[in-house]
Length: 493
Ligand code: NAD
Image (cartoon, helix red, strand yellow):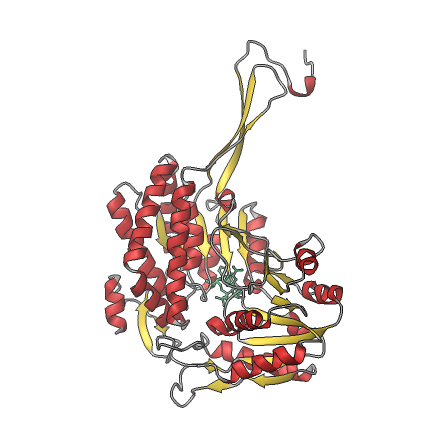
């Protein structure tokens, strides 16, 4: 079955890096890795592609992205399946990830006719001042295993219309989905007819080889999605050469549930956000801050939902929780639960599921950890389905708890009290890049700028004006008078 899927994208096994499915641990393919010389050649080819692509009119660049969106529509089912087989998320979420790619392509096509600059009033007579956005250069996209294809699209669709080639280093855990996307891009480029050969390139490699992309001054922009540990290396490396980085790092996302909340909606939102994708979304719900008056009701209901969760094969209909990506992820979950217990937590759930059926895969029972306080482990992102639950009495207490972690990606509140909702969204409210009212923290739409504050890295990608990060801004002033007045009224000579 896997061979047929790979054949749809023209992928044949080659190389020595073995790719395993987290569904059952079986080998699903082999790929060849790049090394330092091949990465250097790809960077040079990216620079060559830039020389051509930057001069293609932006609306025409948009046409290529439109064709890419068409390929994605035709192959949505197969690519979604491949994402599920390689990454382990349930099929509905694999398909949703491809839909996000289609959506951002549509967005970028429109954007290709809207890369607006400003006309600015000049203080000098007979002068016109304007702001122009130019392509910036080749962009390196480094992506995490948990969104193996969508993250590339959030970046690449914008980069292409902005006039930038892309060199993509996907996670070594999900290279096959990247090869499939590259194959679809190649088909779109062939139909387009005029794209430079190296407009979209893949660098399949170890993180050490990937570091070459971050160090090279010929790559002005690096968009890196992954752990804070990765960002703490890449951020300073890119900054040291005055490059620009878009960092999309870990989250530790919370929900405040207030006394007036519609509890049935809150329960559904909590379930999707805390156990969906087996807790492996950067926006997964990790901290639940509940008013003491509704605590027993809500937490009791959650425990009974958790007891009924269908955990298993992600391609099977009805499954809600697929496997963790690998053994290391499962061990990190176990260690976090041990730490939570030691810090006074009461744990419901956790442990390995379906071990007999899948001895080489790591299915975990989602866990609820009722904590006496926001202890050290609660402030740490564990990339697994653990939901830490805490009580609050006063609203300002809840808000303070909410903001007292190092990460600042996504956040939400469930309330029908307008004052609480507005306080949550105000300057002194949630300190995250994403703040929702009566919606869970995960599953953002592509139309908004996506990213977070503090140790989440501060980058923004996808919608709104995130495109500006892929271009360079130029302020240009034209003198159409017969004099040469200086700015600030300076007389010189
Ligand atoms: P990871 O940090 O282990 O790896 C992410 C990518 O960075 C991989 O391609 C990896 O090979 C590469 N990498 C790591 N160190 C590097 C280095 N020094 N130089 C160059 N490349 C390097 O993360 P992961 O386990 O794949 O993904 C999970 C993490 O990603 C979680 O922390 C999650 O919150 C985060 N994430 C964040 C977002 C977001 O938008 N904020 C989205 C998805 C995932």
